[in-house]
Length: 529
Ligand code: TNX
Image (cartoon, rainbow, N blue to C red; front, side):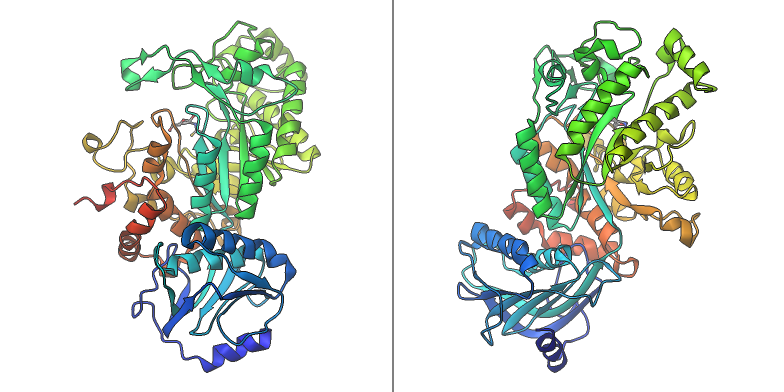
């Protein structure tokens, strides 16, 4: 099989650059050579696998064809025809690169080779972008030869499902769109002050009580207005399992976030015994930061250990996000129990108490073979030994963590917060604030120049965050996420030397019909003059 591939490569004259033919993909590929002519994909095209492991990718391709073009193809294990085949293969040729693939389109065949299944999957995503928009009878794909690989291993998008709840169907669509743009991490923000959204069998009140609030903030924060409408919802474990499998088939890892010790009001409304005051509390209606946080007691740790156990059983990925951001320390500072714990553990102040809290949690997660990741506040009072850091208050936290040889995901507010305005505020729906237009997101460089080459290796990649205090509907999630998500996909995937805003803008502009076809409610703000 490999021989045939090499032969085909040599006898076919590929032209030099991508500008000549319409090979426009996002994120930009590292190398594109144009060919002459087209491959026409028909109902009698045969999918050939050089490795049985690729069956999953072949089925994904068939599913895509069926949903979009109304037919699927026969899958064979060996090459029995000379033309009209689409070969999927595994090869070690590009194994030094992340998620690499080679896509070769000739008049008689298409070949996609990857180092692993993920590479083949990404080759397919590129292929999909080269196909004419459905419902096209003739699926003709321009000849080309693309060699491509990812720049970063963590190509992430987050979604806050606590402040507003989004349906399992929407979560799947969101994941599908991430994968389409070669992103591979979905950070699922499942708990916060305003709602607990994941079923935990051992503690049913988390969702029965914590899953619903008796009103929400309306309009600007400064107006302090509220409605009295009961709002909520949660994902059952069965729904989560289905979503995890759906993501897995698209090479997307889900990182669940269970917030602690702060942003925990919904949990504390259900189980007030885990706060230091024991007060009866209500699930949050107001956005912002709450005083009530988990108490660092043995009872709380036992509770969180059980919760994390169930979470870990549902999510197979390496990382569990444990929050760690915006923890007000007033209650800890005035709690007798906290003073006792601090004396016993020889902790100097409440920052060190927070660090102690996170270290205890890390032990629970590590004991189950997983790693924790937390917001950059977990640096305060000392990082837990194996923790990864998500740098959101700028890039300093990320720099500090990388210098301490801890892994880092960069998500600085000014570039990666997609709850910010993307156009002139007077022309946009109400948002939290800020101003992060498409070009600003695109300009983001995840490796800070103050890091040396060794330290830079700790930067796993960048992530876009969609906080939903002011995002009420699924349509609005898409409006805020797109097209900035696509810009960030290119930041994460494309080699630095092929990154160019004008080129991106033109490719994105050309893809607007595709976004419409995919029913993505993207913002047009970047196209307004
Ligand atoms: C800060 S980012 C928060 C969130 C808010 C967000 C709004 C982070 C770790 N914490 O709780 O939703 O700002 O932009």
